[in-house]
Amino acid sequence: MATTLGELAVRYGCTVQGDPDVPISRVGTLLDAAGEAISFLANPAYRKQLAATHAAAVILAPEDAAQCPVSCLITDNPYALYARIATDLNPSSEAAPGVHASAVVGEDADIAPGVCISAKVCIGSGVRLAQGVFIGPGCVIGDRCELGTGTRLTANVTLCADTRIGARGLVHAGAVLGADGFGIARDGDRWIKVPQLGGLRLGDDVEVGANTTIDRGAIEDTIIGDGVKLDNQVQVGHNVRIGEHTVVAGCVAIAGSVTIGKRCMIGGAAGIVGHIALGDDVVISAFTFVSHSLGQAGVYSGSMPVDRSARWRRNAARLRHLDELAKKVRALEKKLAENEVAYSVHEKDESK
Image (cartoon, rainbow, N blue to C red; front, top):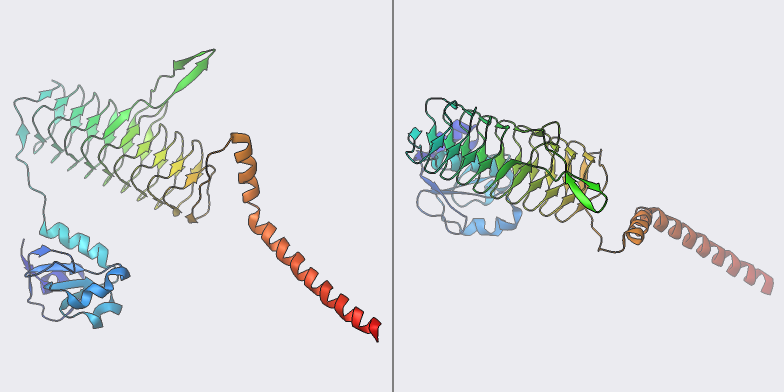
């Protein structure tokens, strides 16, 4: 979809520097963009590439505008504006509504007008699909599942029974939503399966990455709030609750019955033990092991090498007091230095 720089500025409420009539039809990187491509500068690490860019225009922050050799859009959040413009220039292809001949659909499924059901899809009993839902090839939708307006399942997605997804959801290939959680009870030398009787609820505008798995609840539902974004290969255990607009990077493992607040950011390959809570606006660095609740907003990091559990716990407990111990050592060193000075003065006085 071709447009002009001025039209983009009006649409998104930002400032043009340069020619507003520059045509824009695609996006590109600072190094490779040319012709009618628009690029962006959001990370200072790429600032040195700005001077040599051949892009038609660049999206950037006010402090970078003076160094831009081409026309630009000035905004306080260049990356977010780039995301919106890239979406406008690359709209999703509209699938034709209808049910493919190879699909198997439950007789009592409630399918709204405008739904597209692709080849080899299997839809169970009591399923409800709202207007504009797209079901990609090979998807399996279990009994009593519900999908909100405009939600898309790309390919080979499995929704187990009693999974509900709100409006405008996006689930990528291979994801499994609503499978049984890891509920087992020890009975002597063996394990007994605990029935997983809850469901799974995803809010509006949730995105689930490829091969990510979210377990159903053991009794109550597992709940994923509005606007949550889960990367590829994330594991979410049963009865987890994730607050609105939280983002979780790839390979994170969240054990059962964890509560995560709103607007949290969980870095890649982090691990979160079960039955704890993270407050709103908590940020967890990549590869961090979270072993206890974190109620206060802020950035948290840390992990320790594997060891025998008893010694690991003792060391972890002592490590929490390391800063306090360092302050005590500094105080003792200062006191020792003062004593040495006093002793030196005393020796001089004695020698007179």
